[in-house]
Length: 318
Image (cartoon, rainbow, N blue to C red; front, top):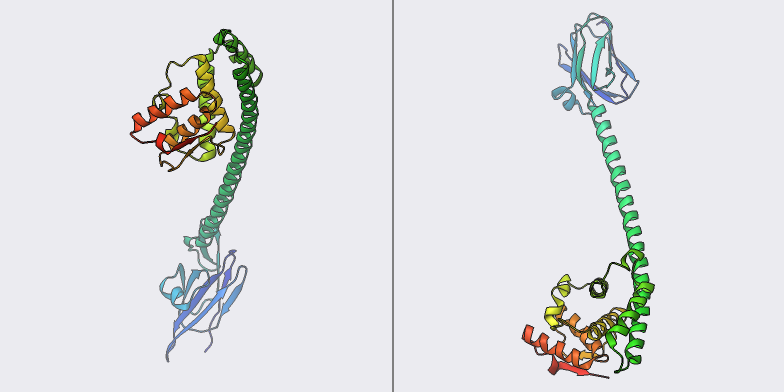
């Protein structure tokens, strides 16, 4: 039986599956296939009306037949070429045009949507990778800065500790300690600790408190302790209204612990689970070698403040 042909042309950059269907006197006929980008197929010449179902992507015959994106009817008499192509500048739709009929059918361009989704996902991954790389670089620079600052602080603390120890050992009872030491201590700090703008504005009490804070932060960071170690430390050990001599003794002990955190002069036989108490005991253990009376008072005050027996579990060594 003669008939006219129908050609299907795929001008999209995506695969398109098709199925053409017609009623034959003996049985319905279905022919299924997939057109790659730029391909064309010619439907067999039959004189029966035909319906052509089209679906984007590599699809089964059932998907094309029951979930089609576009369809076209041919009367079986006219030869036609139908073309599927992208529509508009944004290519958000596909259109089906025919060389012998004026109507145009359209549907969403799912291939373009998937392409856009993949490109967006790629950009998102690249942006996330870039953000993570920048974050790692920032963290690396911060870590380098921290290490540099820690090294500088440690070097300065070592110099200050050496000077404080020497001053303590060289002091004479007949000399007014505060006047001599304050002058020497200011000079030590100017050389090793204070910025230029701080030298004329900070009192010695403010300087000592600031140094204590930095030393505590350094120790806590290195030992990965709780920040609770910093809370009301003077209240815990009872160090209030100390003389300059005692303030410098405490500072010397703190520096000693910060520089040598594992070298303790007092051994706690049953380690306390309270980081704040343990840290305080570490400082007081160092203080025993500098000012035994002040260290003993501090330990006694901790016992009263916490209700925990410490003196009975401590060995003191000169």
